[in-house]
Structure formats: C-alpha cells, structure tokens
Image (tube, rainbow, N blue to C red; front, side):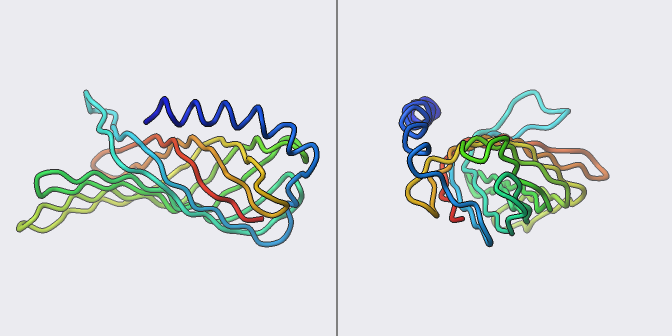
Length: 176
C-alpha cells in the first residue's frame, strides 16, 4: 500500500504543478480536511513497530494565503484477536504553505494525546498526557476550493508511565 501511495503522490505532484499554475486554490475563510491512510505505532522502549489504520480530521480558519490555524485530530488503530490498541492526538496547530501558489505545506501543533488498550471481555486501560504533531503534505487542486491532499504526519504522546508515537501516510480531501 505504501508503494502505491508514493507512486500516486509522485504522479500527482507532476500533474499538479501545471494545474496549480492555471488555477491556484483560494485559501480563504473556513477550511476543513479529512484523510485516511496507513500508519505505524511505536514507543521509546519498544523493539518493533505495529502497522495499522490511521487518519485524521482538521478544521480551522485562514489567516493568510500561506497560514492556516486550526484544530487537528489524528489517530492510529489496530484490532486483532479481541484486542484493540488506539493512539491519538488533539492539538491546536498551524498549516503553513511556504508559497501562495504551491500546494506544499507543513503542519505542526501541541495539545493532548492518549493511548487506549481494549481487551474483549476484560475492559480497557487509557493513558493520557501531552500530544504533539509534525507533518507535511501536498495539495493537488480539484477545483478552486477543493484539493486532494497527500500527507505524512508524525504524532507523539507522552504520559506519566511512558510514551507512544505514530507515523501516518495517506490521502485526504481539503476544502478551502
């Protein structure tokens, strides 16, 4: 799946440069993003990473054609043999475009995070603490107010008894 996403991203970037020059996205007012992809979870004491489903939702307001502010919620999940492990962050952050006419952007924010383990028939255990998000993406215009957004994000959660981190790669839709 990762190879397919990378091939789609590379082909789309080549096509999008020409399309964006002819019809740049109008980054104005309210914006919304939803995305889905694959991710891997690890921790500072872990020897292996676990692959799972990952995604996120973000929304906010536009400060300028290069700076968007908002709330970002990103998560990772894996279910297997009656056990479900999830990790997530909810952060206040920014989406910064170095250029007004290019879709490449950085994402970053700070807030809250949690890790939750649910065992069928036994209940669940949740650890919560500080959360952080760093990422990058590329908007591929679908029109003047919508884009297909390829993204990579790294999220981290730190809590009293440990930490967790997850990486995400995927595709989303951004409405400007």
